[in-house]
Length: 318
Image (cartoon, rainbow, N blue to C red; front, side, top):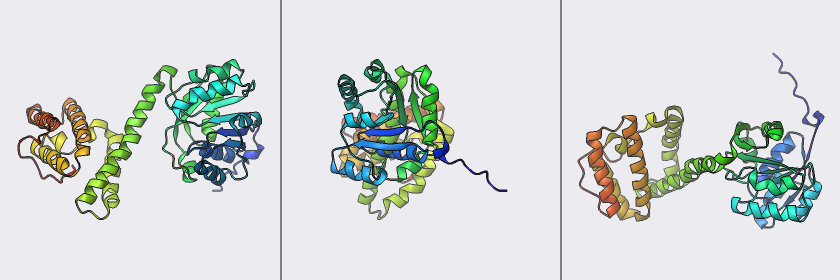
């Protein structure tokens, strides 16, 4: 059966000129996605050599100009600067008269809602908070990854449809986040994604120290399965020596880490305690085994591995 022909994006109404303030990893990718939807990137700002190269790659022929000039040229402005820099940038743009009435001003901060854009609203602009729940590389692969990506969206009621339309045009799925819940929402994403990178990098370092030549190949299938199981089953996917109550194995882990990578011990202990709490609450960890395990973790925090009981083989990731 022939697939129905998709309309040319250029035939759709209400195409917008797009500007990017802050040519980091996020802004050029979102602008490139909007271009695929038929909008027209017209200006970007960026000062570092990396920003200039990134903009040239993802937004060819789009001139790099000052932030004020970006706003002067664009109907839709993407403010893609670090969270802490956003309030000052917004205040400065509004105070200098750069914001035009009716102009869509979008920030991509996970932490902030639309409250930080109050100066934009006072100037007659239309504020939106659209945060892609995605990690970015600053390359063209980011545009592809936006397909099906959730966006944390906060917007005034009268702009909800506009926010939804923009997210969908970028290939994403809007998830509405209340203003007061933005910091908690962002903390959850950082806990999952940012800390995952640290955990994986530390695990690869330890495997190299143990003589594994290709730690990425070893971890890939294991971590992929663990992530899939966790997303499907939550706490029911907990496995390993902590969930089993193998105090002796955990004690051996702590001793090895103190010898070979002492900087990883606090993180290991913290995650082990959190895992024990969740496994105990879920019913996976037997209370009679939890006492020895928690004792090992307490001794580990004091600088000793603890005696513990003899558990299963130390290398079992289950």
